[in-house]
Image 1 (cartoon, rainbow, N blue to C red):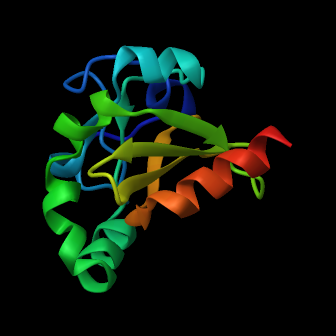
Image 2 (spheres, rainbow, N blue to C red):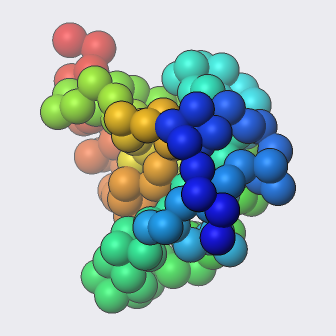
Length: 137
């Protein structure tokens, strides 16, 4: 594993150039679509996944593992991205799955500039609409 500095962590667009950090699972890195990246002003196109987030999704959200594994294919279908009301460095991204369900993908930047998956889970359409209304108020 290559040691990385905060500057290294946040400067690359290419997954192969982005240095590995000790807490991440490199094989679970996700690609952030360019339009989403621009919309929420992210410095990199790679979404890192920590061991703890991977474990939480696999243990607590077992029905959602297939979505997690296919996140690269699902993220280009994002429809909404809103700032998280609890954290300035976190965004809630919503991807429609069906008429009744969406995928909530919570993305955050850490103090080193790394862009990380914070959480991911299915959410009902009415709850997405409620969150969007609250963000516009």
